[in-house]
Amino acid sequence: MRKATYLLPIVVILAALGLSSIYIVDEREKGLVLQFGRVVAVKEDPGLAFKIPLIQEVVRYDDRILSRDIDPLEVTPLDDRRLVVDAFARYRIVDVNQFRQAVGAGGIVFAEDRLDSILRAETREVLGSVSSNDILSSDRAALMLRIRNSAIAEARALGVEIIDVRLKRTDLPSENLDATFERMRAEREREATDERARGNEAAQRVRAQADRTVVELVSDSERQAEIIRGEADARRNAIFAEAFGEDPEFFEFYRSLTAYERALRGDNSTMVMSPDSEFFNYLRSDQGSRSVEGD
Image (cartoon, rainbow, N blue to C red):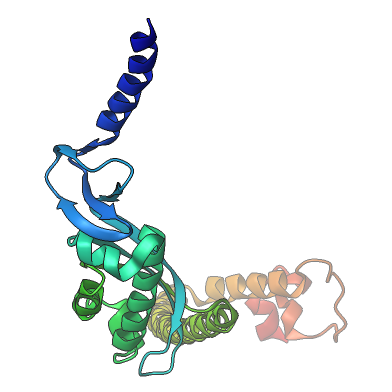
């Protein structure tokens, strides 16, 4: 009974020590075995492994591709047009031993702070060597490749491989946006004014052409009307002359009636003239022209 009392704690302790000497590395991780803070073993393959309990400890690092967003930073290209650049990077820990030596117990947090400093410095250097038009054009892919290649060497000292660097957004600083919008608005208003001026000029040309066409059409119509009117007057005079030749007395009588009608048209029913005026020959006597001849 006494042996069982002493053996049970010993078995429990041995089992605990045995379990603490076993560790498992996931396929998404890499592990380091530390003994008093010094790296004594590297476990890169996934699976079961052993360590000395109580003396050694296991530190695990992510073996997947990681992303890091860089805080927006201002850059000044060659044309002195300041831009705010928002970028991110993808990286991977390729040498966990070197990574541990470089960052110590700070781990991923400390490493990402170092990466931020490297990427910000390289981004400012690369983008500061070109114009803003190059940054905003299709050449951005080449610029991102330059930033990545420049940062690879420095990141390798951390045991990290930078896989990719991308510029997500490139904008003007907020204090410059209003001035830029005002300049764009002024340019658009100038373009609109030019378009209106060209439209007014074209409209004046069209109106002038239309007025010229109207004058030409009216002049031609008036000319043709005068010709027709002249031909009609000539025909009328010929008819009058023919009629006068056949019966001069009737023709004179008709002309007198026409003159009476024109003289007494509308409200004009009063005429003042001498009673013996020839105008009233056919009103004064039924003899018509004979009365005139008698006079």
